[in-house]
Image (cartoon, rainbow, N blue to C red; front, side, top):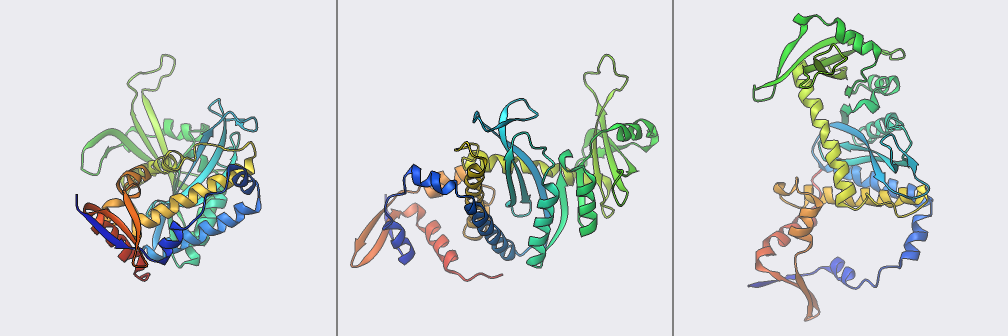
Length: 357
């Protein structure tokens, strides 16, 4: 197979001259330094800000979701699913797949703790860079007066899965049959669901909001319940769009689970290396940094077709490309298969190009 040569610049030369990686003892000591967490968070914030500025986008959607790190470490606590774990609350800008918030805590922590703080943090980050957090999406962990009021105070449109508490169930029961409308997907196909709209408020919310209630036939009716339907309820203050559009928009928050999976499985963050919560938090923050760097590489240095590829695919199709480094005439040369030459030259050209935003 034909081989092509690429002249390596000074930065790559220095990488090739690096000595061995420090041993596990040195890494363990570094992870246990609590001040390193603050430094990593600052680094991540600066990286996120640069990606946001260069994205060319002005309005953003924030998805927040908690995920569990299953472990048998003695310091881990039992979670609501019945196993010991650590928990991480993560927030992503869905428009960029970018992680802009991560709080590492023990498994017994309520999923809703910290949502308001991450919401405010993301809003401030965007405002600092003259951008706007327009939408916020969350599962029922975000269904609290604190979160809803924070959105109202900051002019953020929210869609949050609502708890079906006694008040919401009463609204569903009292809903008139003529209020229900068929729900169609984006292609106009009947989804087999119906929806209706009602006004609601919580005890401590500053403003009322809308409940969008979906129902569909229960394929296995329960023996002692006189209710033939399943229900799913969305709370929102979106008065700009139609209810069916809001439903489809809210359903896309399922991508948050894909983001969590990518960080945990793709970057190895489903492992807790230490008994100490703070050390694990530092370790996970490194994973977020690696994830965000990968997002930056895909968006700014690769073609658009690479944007949806996972880190596993990038490893096989890019990182694991075989090559040979040689020194010739005081020049450092990388020899690769001709098949990859244009791809690597394209990446180098984009890296050298000045930022456009």
